[in-house]
Length: 86
Image 1 (cartoon, one colour):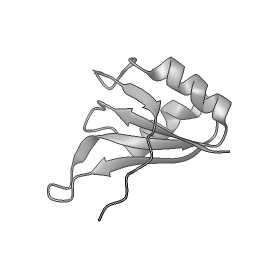
Image 2 (tube, helix red, strand yellow; image 1 turned 90 degrees about the horizontal axis):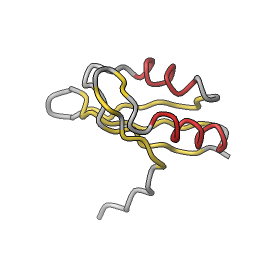
Image 3 (cartoon, one colour; image 1 turned 30 degrees about the horizontal axis):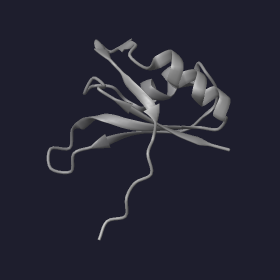
């Protein structure tokens, strides 16, 4: 079963491919998305990675949380369910 991971405090120049390569060291990455500001068309500095294997995702979270990437210390944890918008 896939597990969704939140990745925060990213360098604004980080690409989705770099994010996928970083997490790919720990297992198969199903998707890597960086959230883009709709007004400025720039990265908001956070994104989400979905990994196919839960154990690989847990290993990636443990290894990458508070690690340096792109000159910044990443915040990595399990993504929370999004609340429905009304």
